Image (cartoon, rainbow, N blue to C red; front, side, top):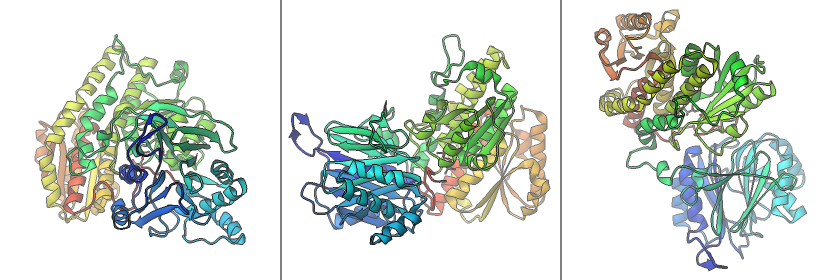
Length: 629
Ligand code: M6R
């Protein structure tokens, strides 16, 4: 949640023979915030320092980044040498100008921004109040700022002061600070919250993720847990909270700034839906050796341990958890290993039965979801091995996992997940097939045949996208709907859940997904004249009972007045008779069908929200990465 950017540069001209950047710290901060706004958009702010400043120059505004940009256009800020910027997802204190970051301390000479939650802030605040400190906001961040200020007065060193304060804070935090005394320096600290360093020539960057500086550099450092980083234009120093030198891992970002632009589409979500054939294709690339065997290079887990696994638990949240539900059907079928799927926050706070023979699979686009991170830690403490399926390099969860399988969806900016979902399902299929290969559950030619089908999926996904206009027209005609239900069986069930989630988060209307078989056990009471119900119909070429059961379910709801919106395979003549609207998808093996069936539901939710005039990239109350529990 909250996006954080920091920058320091030598400024225009040449210094000491170094070709120096011509951009201003304010421009870098605002550009970084534009790219990070998907992390939170309750307010935005910047703080600038330069030699000779008596105090830090700041601007901050409630609402989206556009409000801050308008503010700095109306009231220009002075030129600077370093800047920090923040886009907020509110936790402590409402989304007001006063609660917006940065927060100032030390006679307005120190500015601090923060992502996370300081859990002991009330206690610390009392202590600081007793010292005579005056607070201006309701935020926990201002407490951290005052704590850093106090330590700075004692140590006279911003890095040391950050360490002193960090050791006293409980909870989760990334903190960035600038001080007018050291106008070429930005200091950052992280504990259970993300922070990466961008490495430049005559300039350096900090960001919640690489999007903050991708327009300027691809070279980055991944900070470890409980580390402090101090950047100047020509140096990067990493220590632990006690000031001891520490190591950070260098990496190169493998996508370009253009990948995080709308590329001519009206919204990031629309663009990301269109990216899906590539997201799936790229996730499949380079996974086999010359003999066609699956090789998952990133899996560092001993093969004998993987052979001994007797239970798999998928932990994830939201859309990522629904990809886990799809994985369950595939992995159990291919590998004959029991698979449980758990919401990460539920897994963490009960007493799960986990041991060395349990394989935990953590699925996450951001690699930062706090609930999933806590589940990973808990699983490893119990002796389980953890494989994470992650889209974002440099994030925390892969670093804390035993092995990682990266999805190659590219940056996902829209808050509602689309291409990451398809890439997660694809990666989970690869994991299932790899385990089946390793454990001898399937013959090599069977695995090759499934891989061939998988490699054909990007083409089929493209076909579904090209048929999108009919879905959009239907959505526009339903802009006044107040409730939509979604039904599916088998792998169609998680697709129904995902379709409902997309509609809830984008169009703010009541939407529920059900297992079609559950209908008669209660939900059918919701069916009334005209109630729209999406039904995901399994392939008629798959298990015959599955198809006919869903067709019966459609008849049951239609008989009670439902308006049926059916997703069915090309050539499924049987179901046509019972559909008020039908969205055709290409034929595919039953287990792979979710990669196709979910696409019309994504397009439907996006189009209906757009018809209602809503912002599909930044739905209300949400943030892209949920980095607090
Ligand atoms: O980054 P993660 O994949 O761990 O995020 C998990 C969920 O927060 C995320 O999928 C969320 O449900 C999306 N808003 C769904 O569109």
